[in-house]
Image 1 (cartoon, rainbow over the protein chains, first blue to last red):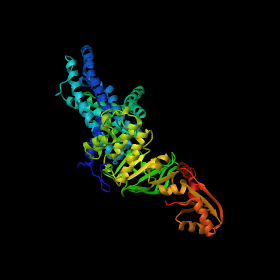
Image 2 (image 1 turned 30 degrees about the vertical axis):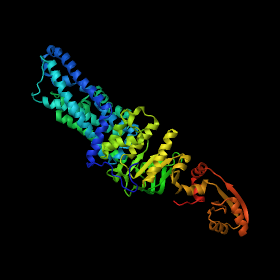
Image 3 (image 1 turned 45 degrees about the vertical axis):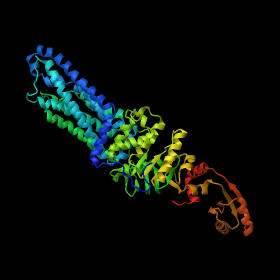
Image 4 (image 1 turned 135 degrees about the horizontal axis):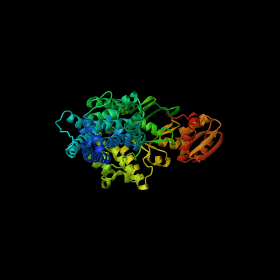
Length: 273
Length: 305
């Protein structure tokens, strides 16, 4: 050992703010396992290849459609629809980013190094959100341009058309919020299978249940489910009784994320690790 | 220095740690002994701010763990060595911990070198043996060059070479003036490593004394004596340089004199002896006596706590 008896060791200390140190640690953790790149690559593949397939198959059906069908055709949502599948990978990534630490016991090491638990969660969410947002926004643009070029000569959109830029950015924001929802659910539940079941139930099963229940009430409430509301972000045309716009839809989804975040922050501080 | 005052932890209706007080002093290896479920790990988690006490306090260098901004410079801990993401390399695992406390990258290489993991540092930790995990955990504990170190069952699953390595490491850390607390249920291991012992059973502190005193009181060769006037004879024996422990039933244990010498002393001073016999209990036996019947034993032998 190198330290002298009785001295207070201060080896290699770097002047750093507590927040930046926590963020850097969370970034190293994120980039040093394969699940992040794997989930993002899977998402990109689904969204971009999906845009090509969806554009190709909808070109012919658009040209053969009735005038009413043509009017209801949403060229942006049509090619970005694969996000409904890809969101499961991003949501799962959010979940396992935290449940992986809980199930391996690594969370104790994390809290021993950084007892400021709220800060750990905040920086974990921030690092996750920045990385996922950057990747998903890039893949959303790629999918949009590819999809529109495949869709032509059927009705297609240009990036400068009204509402289009919002929709393409909205898709990246939507996926980021879904990832964060998974992350906060992961903190609350702590176990991977339960957290995945809860998230997928919320995103996939609940909307199906609502469409099976006939009646105005269920379809109106269905509009406010996290996935249904959030998806308005990448629609050009907005239907439904409440006709939520892109920002209203993202706002509703953000409210769900905020509720999950509030529960996660409250629990992470109080619970024994 | 670790200090606990009336430290208590309750899970549901089970009291895992029941109002214990103790100090762990620098410059010594303090052994934390007790059967599984006695409250050792719970206490260690409370020291590290992982579990919140139901009541009471515990501090490291005068401050609660959760109040520390850069804790790794003060405290290093080996809890569950396997608590590493299997897909992450040893190097990145340590780097993430170092970054969390602003510790330079070069220090990561240094601790890897110290524990002998340099050659496998870039490999995924999932393929490590238990011994390698233990070394990685110790590397993590040493990152901040802390003044206080906690090791929870560090020799579990290690080969003889690894056991000797850890033993030597703990002794040298204490020799450098650091506070070292090591938990174990292996009495034989403790006998070789610890200077001071905290013995815990059913969440209560059963013994808090130097190893030498514990050996003298409970395990080493002692002579059990019963005599007509225990108080006077005890005084005579103490005057002769022996360590005498009086029990409420009138027998007393004598350390430092052989039975032959005690017999001679008794004859010389005119003491009437009822009983004089050598007791040779192993350290392990003493430990089981201490922990097995903690409540009764506490009543019979109040110790410095």
